[in-house]
Length: 500
Length: 99
Image 1: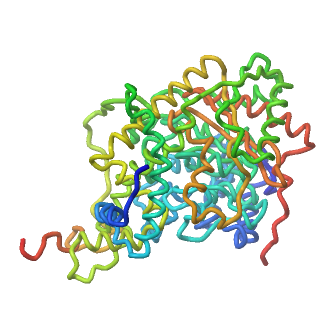
Image 2: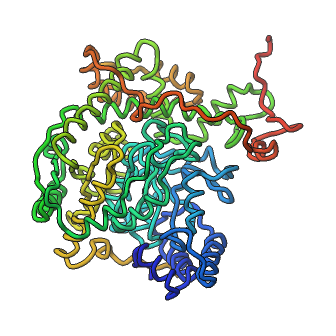
Image 3: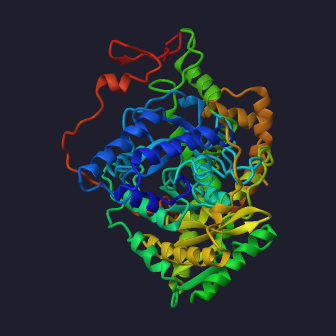
């Protein structure tokens, strides 16, 4: 049962072939068996999950219309979204034990859709990282090779999918934190157009870049979840008041397998030197598959993408240094050093020193530096100009093609510990994913093969509010890939040792 | 290439309210110097006449009706406070001895 897709599980529940409680229990059992080795979850709530499942079974039994096409389907939520009744830690000591007093809009939508929330998943502290090694609560391991990273920051969500602990998960993507974990775990990860999924209740890292989105094992499942969580929200002042792009319909169209007339652009700057040979081989294999489906393939240059990574590592830390100022030891979260003689300022400094990990401190200081008088124009100001150039490059490219493609990551999953002492090497994991965050347009990653036994991701980028284009191409590609390879790639993940 | 000294990192840490240790000062000085050296590449556009982008969605002045709506109760707002007293957040002293 745990190997079924979310769409299949929803159908089985709706037609009473299995109960939602049985589905939830199967996943809870799987978590108990394999999570000691994988450590995808920070918190599992068995009772809550079974109660939610029971409510769906009662609806089915009474013949009531179900709340959504995913009613009764289990889901894991990244621990950066607030949810009442459980702690929200963001992978940080500073929020250890914090019970938020409200639900994030995304969580509220999942509950309203009758979905069964299994628990909260591990992540790099405050979503800063590419490996989940920056969590204060221990690393998450990649089910494809337990000595390797599951990507980050949403490594817990993607590992939960690849370990068959959950059929769906929620991630957040500021510079690639949905897509890069998706790529290295052989799962599907989608960053919707900025502003189309509410940020209300998403603990802010870099407000102008953060975007929640679906994580799944198939493109259809991602689209079904996308339509549950997207939509305008007055509680988020950057939310776009526009209809949700028709992503499920686009997947159905794509599954027909015909991409005739679709123009696909390969981004010249996202490939070549510095990319692992196996990654490039898998990518070129995907390109040939798209060509065989009828797509017209051209190469498109986006010269400013070469400056995307440096600009991102100025803009995101700058915004983070401001956003994380709220962790001041006064209203919630950790407080240390309050011995009734120290000043508020000293307590604040001691608490932040004790509560934040090294990467968060590095980025706060980097952002503070970039925003300092005397440096502002050279660093932050220039990074904002680069952002304009990236947006212009995308606009010019989308005049010529319908979607842009690249490898999702330059390499496959690296070994745990390999890059922890070298921040710049870690940052390069986001080389291909950052441009879409800077411009705000839609982008997704779909598995496109293995390199030395490890998954490789194909990134498909679409214009803002045209998320359905990427879904259509991804669905067509996925169907062709599975037909050519004799089954879904995810089923080649090695069997995990089961704890008893 | 810019360089970040140990003293400069200490200054940044003070501004950011981080009571970093001596060992961290050494570590972060080296790492921040390396990172700033790498991100300085954006300086190649510094002199170009390009409008800055601060946000992907060009929204300004998002208004809503001025209506009363439910918020957190006092008890909810204080529930996670490190210290509370008489329905308020209790904080360490905020003024110096001589103030």
